[in-house]
Image (cartoon, rainbow, N blue to C red; front, side, top):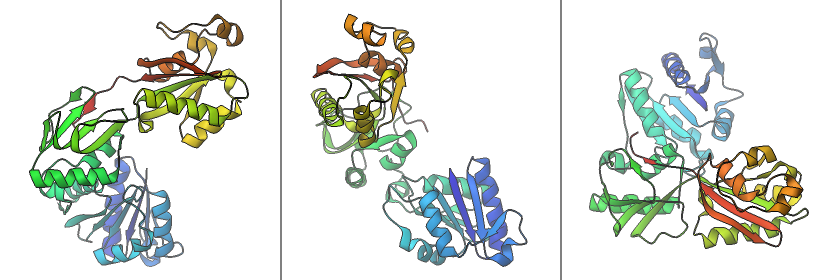
Length: 348
């Protein structure tokens, strides 16, 4: 995790050193930059290279956190040319040079700026100035929660509509296909229907609430076997067909896996790359060691050393999870799907 701390005065640079030290203690890889005249007198502080504009451009490209020690106006003008989208931008904070106020400017929820601001304010014995509506009203922020839990939201528009409905009504429902751990946050109630709600599922279609935001854990693993020379297009067609029949969302897919003899299979490699899904390969011995009742094939065992590739690969990739779609075959392509064991957590 990369962070950048900018400062513009002697006092600000000294405070920046405290901020940088705290962030390093939390595991951040920190670059601290200031004007040259202050950089030369503070160990570990680098001069702007070649200037603040270029430093900020690099920070927005590579860092997950950008902290300005100084006036909010300087921070706003500096970051303005680089702002892209709330799910792409780094968390941006501004802190006055006395450390009295820590203000999240950008990516308060998804980027974690609000939470970081609170921790820094506590460290500096200052005040976090958080302005997002759900925080001001002490209500559940679904985008921040999903980011912390590594869940994929159906869309930011859905999250915004959910937040608006919660602010208007003061409460919203939650429905989960998985066990829920921890007490529900303020503003959430268990429900199966209603005006607005959060659904936690790996499914594609979930007609529960009139205004719904879906949070999908990335816990579904696809196992694939295929004949030599199978095209990426044919693999994509069959995988998508299997997912649609099972009402599984591509947003819940964690990876694709197969046997290691397919490591050079061009169609399989191209398919995984096009979907941006990690591709893993297992040996026949690894697949044979997977416990369970699988659809066996003597022909497959004779050719590759294991009686089933897709089911065993999916279960192995899922850390011995549950096989939720058994072997589905079409034109020399076999597909199976497994799901990890999972609990949705609110105790954070």
